[in-house]
Length: 280
Ligand code: SF4
Ligand code: SF4
Image 1 (cartoon, rainbow, N blue to C red):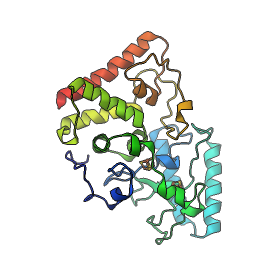
Image 2 (image 1 turned 30 degrees about the horizontal axis):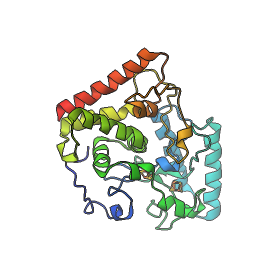
Image 3 (image 1 turned 120 degrees about the vertical axis):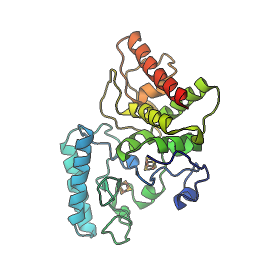
Image 4 (image 1 turned 90 degrees about the vertical axis):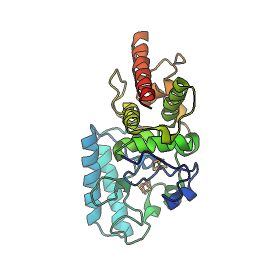
C-alpha cells in the first residue's frame, strides 16, 4: 500500500503532474496503472482472473509480432475479432482498444502496447495506428481529473492496492465524491490525506471496493464503468428517491425490488462510513 502521508504538491513525485489537470497524476502511480479510458474493462470477461488471462494472452502475442504497420494493424483486427467472439461488450458504443495490455515485465500493470515506453517498441510511438489516434491517446483525461479534489484523489490513490481495482474505482468520480461527502458530513469537517492512518486506509479501501464486491442485490455483475460525456443516459433500475448514497448505488449497480432493499443498501454504506470515521 502507498505511503499514508501525501503532499498535495507532488511535483517531486512525478514530472507528469505538471502536465495534467487537477494537481494529482492518476494514470500511473508507483505501484499501479490504469487503462480504463482505453476500454480495457469493456469486454465480456467473467471474473477478475478471466480478465487477467485474456489481457495477458494478448500481451504475450503482441510481444512476438514485428513492429511494422501491417503487422500491428493485423494484430489489432485479429484481437478485435477475438474480443467480439466473447460476446457483447458491457458498453457496445464504447471502444475496447485491442492494444490495451500489460506494460511491465511481471504482466501486472495495464497499459498501452503501442506506447514508446512499452518494451520492444524501442522508443517508437505507434499509438497513431490506434482507433483514437496518437493525439487523443496522449491528451485525454477522465472526469475524475476535473471533478474530484486533489485531497480526495490522493486518498483514493493511497487506499487502493491493485491495478485492477484502481482502474475501476478511479473513474467513478461521482461515487468517490459521494463517499467523501458522507465522511465529511459525519465528521462535520473536511478530511485531509495526512489524517488517514493505516487502519482507516484499509477501511477506505473496503468502502471503495464495494464497487466490485457489492454484497447485496445487483442488476449487472460486470464492473465496467462508462464515464464519458453522455454517461447520464446510462442508468440502472434504481428508483432514485433522492437517496443520500445514490451515486454509490449507481456505481455498484445495486438493484432493488422494494424499499427495504434500498434501506439495507443505505445501512451497509453508512455503517462502513461510520467505521471509517471511528478509526480516524
Ligand atoms: S481513465 Fe483516467 S486515470 Fe485512467 S488512464 Fe484514463 S485518464 Fe488516466
Ligand atoms: S492505443 Fe490509445 S486507446 Fe489503445 S491502449 Fe494505447 S493509449 Fe489506450
